[in-house]
Length: 189
Image 1 (tube, rainbow, N blue to C red):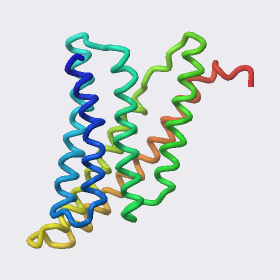
Image 2: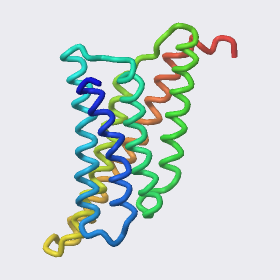
Image 3: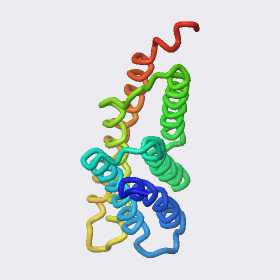
Image 4: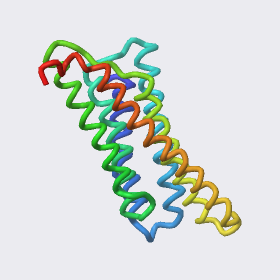
């Protein structure tokens, strides 16, 4: 297994660790540690692709698992946020709807011998989702330290929600763009 694929697997292995810190209320500094784990996992997303392209280490495993690992990381964290009453379930539903839709379209295209490549909107979606989640971790972690004034955590949370809603807009727009680009596969509808 090459280095980019190992980084992808590492990202998946971070998921249960992050979930433990998110859902186990008795752990001290759980938001800080969970956020650091999420940040490290997000960093592997950036690194695996860069390394794979630079060293020509692109594999079928990487093509499949890299986007799946991203989705698993984001979705598991957002579902935990729903459990913690940080975001509404509708956020998860919108993102899941888009992911299932695009994955289904890619399967149809693949069956017809075509590939629906990632586009800039999909990358913007992923980056804004990760930034929003990291912001929420930072806002919650700020509350774990008595020397940090409460208003800092509150402002960080407000900014994180702005980024999260931007991510939702990017999620919807990227879904629409993928559907438009794949319209040729639905001429028999």
